[in-house]
Image (cartoon, rainbow, N blue to C red; front, side):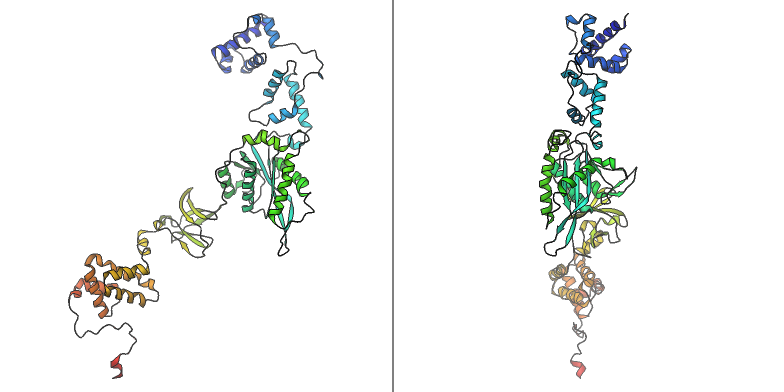
Length: 512
């Protein structure tokens, strides 16, 4: 049997099994003893020829079917045949899952005498080779955002002191559209680095799936060729915005070629135009940068015939991850060890954690308003941040029960409870508190005396306090002994002298 007739028979069977039976390409290939690529090729040719199953009656002849599937080459000169829009092809390749094969098939569908797939690929390669080398990489829409600092700075003059400060220039470029963001900041420190990212994400109105950064010390704790370590705060930002930090490899500038070109363009089209202007505040400098940034993104690209903004609206913007409901709040992380008093020290202030975590190593997340303590990723404490140095912030639930009992007693509460027992109890406790160098040193004795009320009642405790005053006894043990022996119920001896609250007074008998 001739080869052509064999091919036509297989194509008919492939179309029947695919459209009528609904078998997959792999199952069809296994059933007919063909390669899966061959089955895919037959289906693609049938789709471009507009064939389905069942075939129309006029295609029962194998020759007509073959001519439909394998049309003879066009006799039109190549310069008269339709040429693909290579700029459109290049843009479409940046969309997810778009391939040259798919674009060639769409080109063939639009033109009956188009060129072959090999010609299509070779001509596209030649066209792309005439672009700048940095554009040869194909960046999928919404996939990567490249960030870095410019090597150039801008000066801001302090209007009061006349001090001249150099401002750092932050640049962010989206991979698919080259849409650019730039701003000035005071430094390249971690707070400024994070704040610039937050404003860049807000400017784009979304977040790319990957953020490619240089190995800046503020963002990358350890620059390693294979396993770089991202700063904890930078990783926290990425988690909040659902992006992944991908540091460029050390000494591999092509890993971030987009932002390298973006830095160059910002330097030439923005910073160079502002070189003769004087700025007296960071806000004024950023306002001028923003005005020129709008012009830069609206300027048509020479190779594309489209502006960065048009490409952004067409490619990147629909593919970006939406912004979270709230912008990221800057937070620093610190490793701490819980002290014996179940507190950790942060910026000279002490914050409590559950007392059973003594000597454990924990992590503190520190924002402008809060301090959160984590143990192995689980939050164990949260406090409002305090700026008072050498003072504690303690949550009662973090204290042992014994500590909590004494913490609830204050000077005023002790006096109030003593007055409820009786006047003698109030007097004795007041004497105890005043007799110590610090009133807090008498708290335990006073609390112990008040605790005797539960066992002996208010009347007996007040009477015992009266007997203790006569005996010049100022301790819990004396009152407890009086109650235990029952001497609070007996009248005091006549010869017992009243207590002298100030023992250093000589009295009348001294002068006799």
